Amino acid sequence: MPDVKVGILIGSESDRERMQPAVDLLEERGVGYELEVRSAHRTPDAVAQYARSARERGLRVLICGAGLSAALPGVVAAHTDLPVIGVPLRSSLSVLDGLDALLAIAQMPPGVPVAAVGVDNARNAAALALRILGA
Image (cartoon, rainbow, N blue to C red; front, side, top):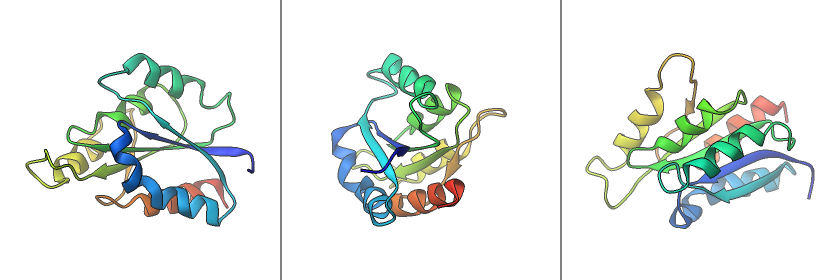
């Protein structure tokens, strides 16, 4: 495996399948990644620690998949100066079929930037990460 440069976070194991296209593209391009499950709501301290230590661990871009309130990308961005890409995910519990997650990711307060890709579009998140990396 090449040097790990991209961190992929999901809030729940159930999000893994929808984030797989990001993994697939990074693997196709030979870019190292790590995928972790950490919840902004259930394990906030673990999320903060992950984000704070990302740069020193060699990561250069973070991708966060999140549904419903989609807090994960914003929480991560609040604890790192690395680029953060949010992937809004559909949920069976969503009343807006993923639009709620998209709006939550796109509407970050000033000073907490998070890029947003389309709903369930993890592949585009990886494509953007590759562009950020210049890969």
